[in-house]
Image (cartoon, rainbow, N blue to C red; front, side, top):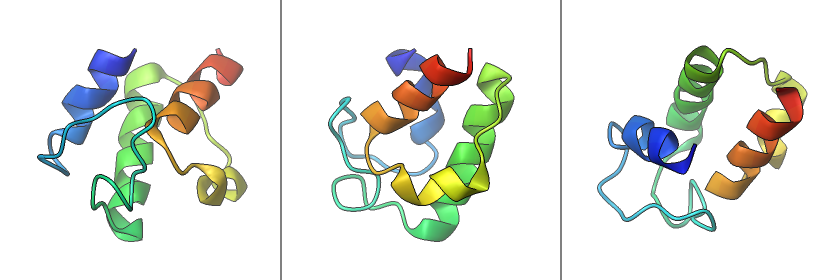
Length: 71
């Protein structure tokens, strides 16, 4: 799962990606691109993340948790 997320994130950052990486602070992804990234996550993993949850997704680990929760 982490490798797939890293592959998607390659479009948005050149920073190293770990589970604890913060999307904005560590990877430098602004809120506009976070929305695009989460949309790609939804498409890739065939899940839905409620838009109300978007603001609680801070780290790559948070993304992984949402994927696990919706499967």
